[in-house]
Image 1 (cartoon, rainbow, N blue to C red):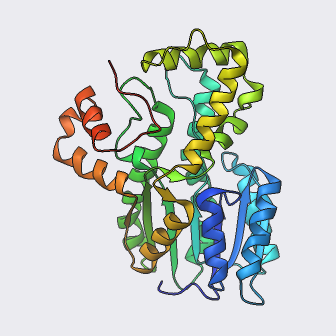
Image 2: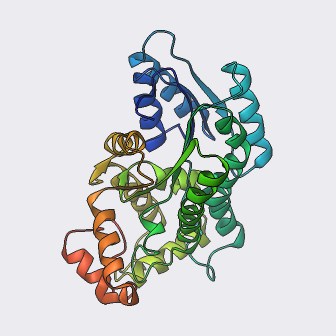
Length: 325
């Protein structure tokens, strides 16, 4: 699919970050876009920004939906059919995602399953729900966002990261398996799996909101857990007040967004160029490229402390877990 003009695209998680950038860049090229998110105000901002640069007649619609809930995804599909007066779409970007549920042992089960439900369940539900509309088009492309953590299940040797990593590995495997499935059963469709590294988005801040534990809402238990995490990373936190700890949590989220090596706009451009080139594997960012190469080179030692130390010494992952002592 070398052009997007006149096509119809569905983008999940379009309120901020890569989702917003995808909506804007698609609309600028004259692609009609339907997007969903769980936050209304950012989604409305995305629509306004997208229409500012879009050719006359381009449609951009929004819908509030939690992609982990299949019923809400179906309602989103019905809205797309109604508002775009269509029985088909050409592009589906399964982009929505949150972090959280780092530990299978120490974290609450509901937090773990909430993260896995959005990051894997959202991809599954949206693919199941919108696939008939993709098949109904003369050509279609499914784009699933995995992660660097679909290549390497770690953000540091002392920082558990199980729910997000498990989900992103599932997205990667699902997408790769669909290559043959589409070839046999829907040869006019293509699939790409996107594996971004550290991209300048609000995923850290939005994830806290999604779990109901943003900095201002953190309970004593949440704060104590964060203190233990900092201590494990060699950053003494026992003497930090609750107020300063909350400020630190907010600051970390803002730094993740503002100090990333790759912007959301750059990431979206790489993704859309990859779709145009019909690449099934789209790695976004130098950090993801390095991790991909290094894990393939020596998979047996990818989770050793020395592997992480080597990555840090090369200037990667400055906002993630500190080196282990």
